[in-house]
Length: 252
Image (cartoon, rainbow, N blue to C red; front, side, top):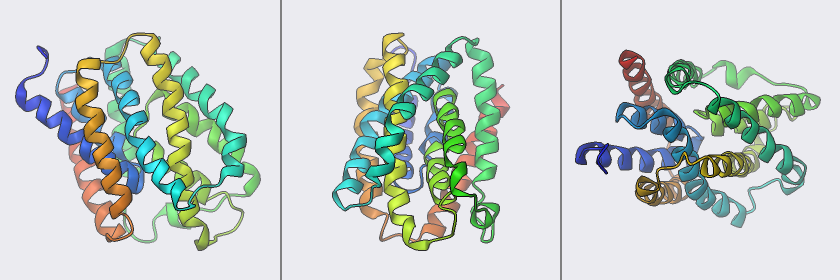
């Protein structure tokens, strides 16, 4: 691969593995992978397309693992499948109408804002917020469009979208919301990646390295999720993502 040095290739593979692990645990893998791919000089829309295709391979593993242990709301997924495919695809098409440099600049700001919104301190706004159940439809329309256009933090936002629209705070729903959010993310990236493949925006010679790393990361994250301290995980990921987003902004 002429456009990547050996160290850049290693960095991208490491980011894909860490991003897969983060996606399975807390849905924040794009905050890690997208800045690293851009910083390594991969053209912006190839970053978007390759990342979406890699996520299909990686998230399928954690989604399947959560399904096997009964952590999925199939009734909700049946209603969400079609808009979950079409809306992100439309948003990805809209992104492709922009100049690559402009999209990369938007992503730099989005990644920084998404990183700051994932602040892992106790008593944060995410923990206090609760929305009425009837708001679930509009909330997910926005989230699907965001995931197709950009994607960083979308897995965590899918989880919050489910968890905060029950109409009441029910701790017993957390496990189901986690597994269902992975399926929502999988359906979303499946639609977007199909468009990206059709438009030729996937670097296939890089894809297989990154997909293998992402699959391993997702499997490890889904396996380790129940044994690790969630608070420590959130702080480590927040620090890494903040450093990546600031580096990306500095490059603009």
